Image (spheres, rainbow over the protein chains, first blue to last red):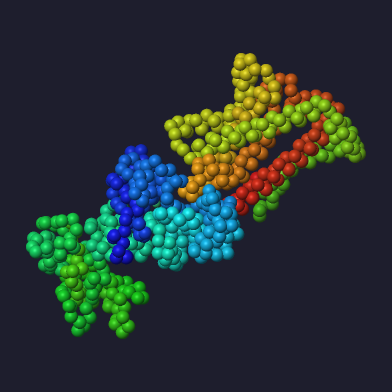
Amino acid sequence: MTVQSADRPSMIEFQDVHKYYGDYHALRGITASIRAGEFFSLLGPSGCGKTTLLRTIAGFEGISSGAVMIDGKHMEHVPANQRPTNMVFQSYAIFPHLSVEQNVGFGLRRDPRSEADKAKAVAEALEMVGLKGYGARAAHALSGGQRQRVALARALILKPKVLLLDEPLSALDKKMREQMQVELIKLQRQVGITFVLVTHDQEEALVMSDRIAVMFEGEIAQLADPETLYRRPNSRRVADFIGVMNFLPATILGEANGQIQVEAAGLGRVEIETNQAPGAISEGEASVGFRPETLTILYEGQTASDRETAGTIDEVVYYGDMTYYDVRLDGVDKPVRISMRNVFGRPVLDIGTRTRVAWSAGALVLFR
Amino acid sequence: MKLPGLRLYALVYLLFLYAPIFLLPIFAFNDGTIIAFPLKGFTTSWFGQMFGNDTLARAVRNSMIIAVSSAVLATTLGIFAARAGSRFSFPGKGGIMGLIMLPLVLPEIIVAVSLLVVLLGMGMTLSVFTVILGHVLICTPYAIAILNTAFSSLDRSLEEAAVDLGETKWSTFRLITLPLVMPGIISSLLISFTISLDEFIIAFFLAGNEPTLPTYIFSQLRFPKQIPMIMALGTCLVLLSIVLLTIAEYFRRRGIARSGGKDTGGFL
Ligand SMILES: Nc1ncnc2c1ncn2[C@@H]1O[C@H](COP(=O)(O)OP(=O)(O)O)[C@@H](O)[C@H]1O
Ligand SMILES: [Mg+2]
């Protein structure tokens, strides 16, 4: 999340991109800009059109209307093999009949450099992805993680302007996935190339990206940096998709001085900043949302710094470092989830305990 | 295999299947014109007679020309059809594929007779070439069936990856697609070759005066004196089949090893 990234020129521009598969409207007016050198993620549930959008950048998928520009150039008549992009496929698409170094050097076939120079480039690319000395191996004998590194080296050796990654980590086990996430971020910083990652894993997107476009049904629902997406999702749907969010029914009473007056179930009357209320609502029924970690259970003798509400513990889920409590706030039927970091010497509370919950209006988000 | 009955059944089954084939070499080397036990003594004269027979040599040459041409043509057509069938969807695809596969289930005698009528109607003289036409017709469905499997088990993103790395459609086909479907192509060539080599009905109708191996063998069966020589010929053909199958199996296994798949058992 670099500060200066906002000043960077745009590398990819989508201008009202529509895509139909027969009658099926797969992309419904995508307008967005991906900046040079950023780690950009397309995040959304399966079938929302992430891969389709990524493939319109690579040139594998034509578009029905609109425009895709890469580095200021119109891509309409530029075929896939001439675009300044390279792709890491979901299946990795390692050529099984070639060795590791033949795979990595595949894109250099048309390169005018000498064979010795190319071999050097291949060795460097292999070293960059941590596969030094694997060059002579048969590609089909590699593990999943190694295949992925080969796919990365094969794409990066051509020094593309944009690297496209379609769910590159989804085939790996959890441990390997977390390790590769870190490696990918490092790699991106090292080469400085624009990365566009497709993923359905919100945690992965939050960890890795400078900015994220959340997609539903062929549309971008919100495009923002991870922190904004997490703290100020612009709809209940985005909020639900990213992390856990509690919702309480609320009535809007009025607006004054950049603050919206709300009567929220269980919490009472609160003022919410208008910038915490996406989708301009003036009056009527709404809901108030908050993340589990923004509420704190108060122990004996503790007092709230801002506001507090009484409730009863309904369910306790112990995670070792964390405990999740489902708390029924007085006057609300549906329990809310609260996460508490476990501290040495502080007991985990039992189901049925009467408790007080501390919160502050700054952490609330108002939804239509 | 706990039931002794099943074991017996398997034994009898194999015996029934292969005993006649074991008889071929036995009588091919038997010094007597009558195909019956007891054996008379060892001789290689039937093989000598076989190699000295001009008509047989001609039949072998014709059959080789026909089988090789049919295999190459049917496989080439099969590559185009399988590639199109596994990659593109176009209107009437199902119907077209159905029509191409039809000769697989059509009685061969009907194919042969209708071809004969059409070819004669067109004023063509019957020759080795007309047999090739007929054999391509019956071999192509087998070629397509084999190649379809090869093409559709090919991960589509492999071709896209090659294009992504700068290759054109044609160089991608040459560098990626072709090597990966090569085991399928070799299977298709061998199967088509084998089908064409022992095909009788179409060859009988469409060859005119030219002998092929099956039609020659059939014509010689009327002469009891020739039968030991046919046994010798049969022995050679069995050997040839074993060699071909071994080659096919070798390539199939190599193909699996190369692409890193699991061996799920071939025809050997
Ligand atoms: N070649 C195609 N033909 C028809 N429909 C397609 C094709 N490719 C994708 N789709 C449809 O478009 C939608 C979006 O697909 P995709 O971009 O692969 O989703 P995602 O990657 O977000 O899971 C899906 O409903 C899918 O069924
Ligand atoms: Mg996808």
